[in-house]
Image (cartoon, rainbow, N blue to C red):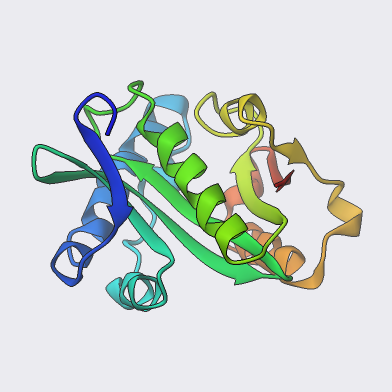
Length: 171
């Protein structure tokens, strides 16, 4: 526990609220001129349930309230950060960093030596933030098939209107 925040596996009861938290946190993108991101559809709760049951969903809890989460999947024999979200009003406290470090521990414990994610290259709490934690941009023309498919889906959703990149971290 650091600053009163605990990082742990999500419980069944916590899963239902996570899509709304992701939507609320996405409003930060509007301030950066990325309205398409802010106006995107809410994620399906089923994906969170699946991740929680597989032990791939961690939450940050402060005073009994969930204030952040990281949702993981396995992609191309690596642990892929599908989403990391910190609730509005709780940013800038190191919660996202702690969630990612906890995700790295899970990946190591499960025998993985690499993690991946996709991010907006120039958004301060995306590309530059991940770089500060040791993540490195991957060349777009040499992505493994699963990661390339994820990037294609992002492009189809209109997210490539702003520079995006796939990133990896060796563990």
